[in-house]
Amino acid sequence: MGGKFKKSKYILLILIFFLFGIAGSIFFNNDFSILNSSPFKKEKINVLIIGYDSEINGPSRADTIILASFNIDTKEAGIIFIPRDTRVKIPGKNYGKINSTHAYGGIKLTKKTVENFLDIPIDYYVETDFKGFENIIDLIGGVEINIESHLYYVDKAGGLYINLKPGRQNLSGSEALQYVRYRDIAMGDIGRVARQQKFLNAVIEKGTSPTIIPKLPGIIKELNDSVKTNIPLQDITPFLSLAKEVDLNKIKIEMLPGEPKYISGVSYWLPDREEVEIMVDNLIRDKSYIRNSSYKLSIFNGNGVPGMAGDLAEKLEKYGFEVKKTSNADNFNYKQTEIIYYSKEDRDTAEGIKELINGKMQFKPKEKSGIDIIIGSDYLQLIGEENNE
Image (cartoon, rainbow, N blue to C red; front, side, top):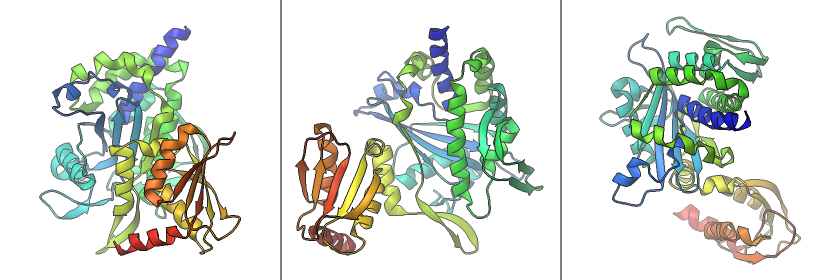
């Protein structure tokens, strides 16, 4: 029973990933056909995931937009939730909300828009409508979620009725759809994306339960009926056995950086171009963002200028690092920034930080984890150069 459950558990993870289009484990294979057809060495596969609404008020819009990138060598995955109100340049049209691309030109236009917006190639897409979403959640027996506050919203014209009471409860398919679609006035898309991330984690947890095993045939059938994808069949079935290689600790989920803003009376999610570029570089083009998140940094102000530690912490957090401490150094006379690491395994990461902030590296072997940074006066020159660019 143990071996059977373990195998079914990983198969279900694939199915659950497909539900959200994340389909991660099936791509971790060097024999993936798109790799063989490329004349260049290719280690990453990018997948666009779309959940679209009904056509009550015209062509369906993309309600959930996720970009997932998988490194087939390291088994790492970077996942970015793109708020549906994100303001982008739509090919053949003017600027508008990214969710409208699905109404204008279906998945093909949405795919092209994301590719242009983030300057990355997208290999495959996976999309499903709300009905398929509901059916699959019902088939797995619902999903347990702790709802933090009363979620209530009614849109009669759009056929949307949301009324979920607070507390821990098992959500049915229709209730789960209400949960991931709810959009409060104060938080807008930020709150919705946070709920979708929370929901995804809950689905994965439910998917690893032994109670799922007898439900697999029905789930597979529903996936075949409700999921649309351009992934060739031969690129799916041969790799199901490789699902056991998935390491959930190597999956990093983030939201597209930006801020809500009104433009000509219309509410948008306005991307922060600098932060978006950093996130895409590190999470999609490269997977260092995922590895960086496992590091705990301590940053100390060694030049005496107020705000230096906080400034550097903000800079490094954009690259995925977790800053556990900011404080003053033992004195303010440091001329050169020092990057101190305590394990030989951390040398490459320390070198990466050095490339960002200059300074010098020091190796101090001891039973201590993390990396310490003492900011010297040379950091002021670096800030000045960056501000003048």
